[in-house]
Image (cartoon, rainbow, N blue to C red; front, side, top):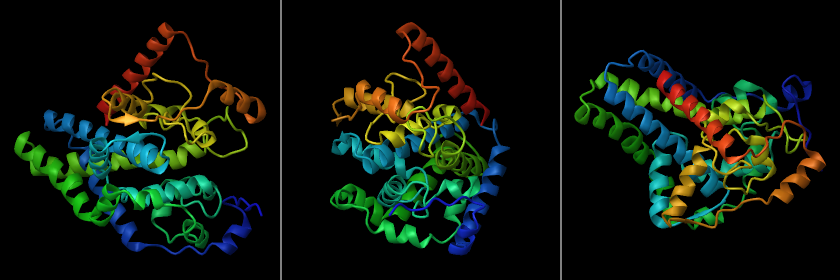
Length: 333
């Protein structure tokens, strides 16, 4: 039986969902965001520390988009042990649950997208899909359907399970102690800048960009590949989330390692990273979708505004523009 989609205003939703707050999460997230807001006003006090913060922020976000998401959640490519260790380190740089839990929730999100079994169901509104789902007890359907997700591949992965077992210690060391100490001792930043800006503010920016994929990329945009699903093509998220804004495409073809239709797009920094690992010989079996299959899907159920694969010269110019936007955005924050 097809599960009914409930909108935020649907009275049936109010009857079936009893909101139970997780106050510990609310307090922790609230304190971190307030501390991060304070860190925002500490910029330019130590330029090398600001540059290091940006680099560490990019590394942590790529660990989620390229590691937890494309490698471990979707198995859209294979990576050797060295690449997995690097990606595991990068994913641990940001505090977003262990790779195992992240992948389990994301697989459930794809299987039950925008139903009550979706952990961050966009039908319950922007705030819920962005961060509210972390502040509340899971819907009973999330728990029930979550038990049906096959996680045997990650359970057999010793590196993933090591990170899962020792997650909080690793997060403390890699996401907090390491960047703070490096900024203070190696770059000469004050402890105030090292802790509140380099560590906490960097975390707040990274995690909110990833959360925007669950919220913005499910609510505002167009649907050229499948107009019958919720996820959309979100231009802003393509730039600031390193290629994760091609979301209508991704939910239509989740096995594609690019999460987008085209190669060599600087908006898709995650794909560029994976391709670099491939050229080093550390990555193999990158899964892609043929143009014929994409064209056929667009004809059957696509909407409009599908991008055109332009000539190489125009593509380079376009990509330089988006690369510039990336640099400007990172400079502003």
